[in-house]
Image 1 (cartoon, rainbow, N blue to C red):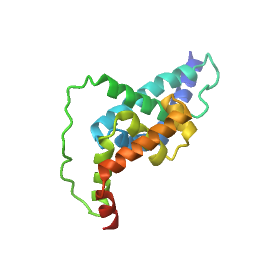
Image 2: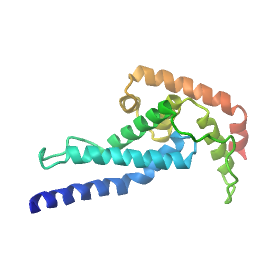
Image 3: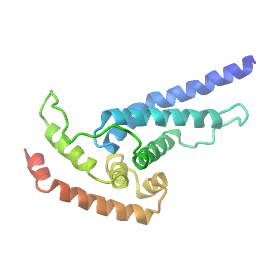
Image 4: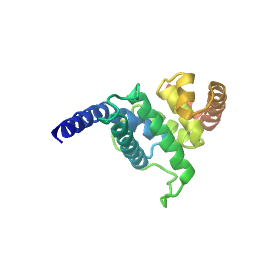
Length: 181
């Protein structure tokens, strides 16, 4: 019994190390995926970590002897994006999004530019938003993005091109005005 307890503590310590190193990055990506909805982003990260823990326990159990997840950090992003896309399909939430972001105090700097980008990103369909975040925020390759989204590299290229065109249409001249100020 003591051997199983020690193995469980070692397994859990590895998971805690993974979450300590990735939670902030997952949260930032989730914020972008949700169009700036911090509360939904927190929920997505929490659900991602819960799913990861179940997988982690199964993959790192004393029965298997070793992990079958080659890159747990990359796998966590896959789980996050799939959780986000599944949530968007479900739409079972009774919460309604608001049209305007609340006033935020702080330095002006590039906050107007950030808010404009987040608002435009939030108007994209979920899969378009996911491909833009993965390709341009996370700086992932076409192949990595295709793997995360369970699609072909050609589909990722097409979706990226169309999503960026939609984003340009939504931003219009406001982006160049904000970027130059």
